[in-house]
Length: 143
Image 1 (cartoon, rainbow, N blue to C red):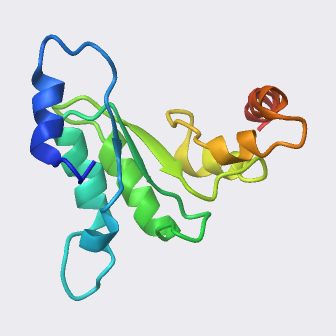
Image 2: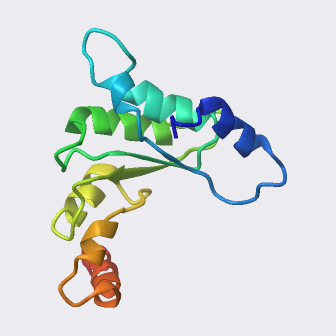
Image 3: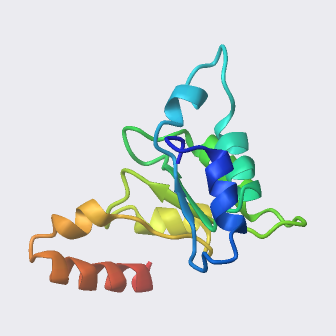
């Protein structure tokens, strides 16, 4: 997302000829959010500003993986994306570190209005990608 900028996201979301959901990816956001001495909080950058710019869903580092943000900050991002306001809400998409074993935690921590993203786990599934897709659906249903 930040390779092209928030203004481009807003332009895409306001274009009447673009009639598909727009999902913002948090790549390059770490350089703006990781320092405690300067920068901007994840909840503002990935939550509020991307939602204000028109994202329908925002992918951000989950608290479950090695590249994630802490659980409190992830919760704040989710709250900013789903908070009732004059603008439309956006789906939280916590990513990185999500696997079949963390799906129940994702649903518990982020609720039902979440997109569960675990492509790597599906592709690495022992029975192949098709079996991994079926296992994903089964796991989400049972969690």
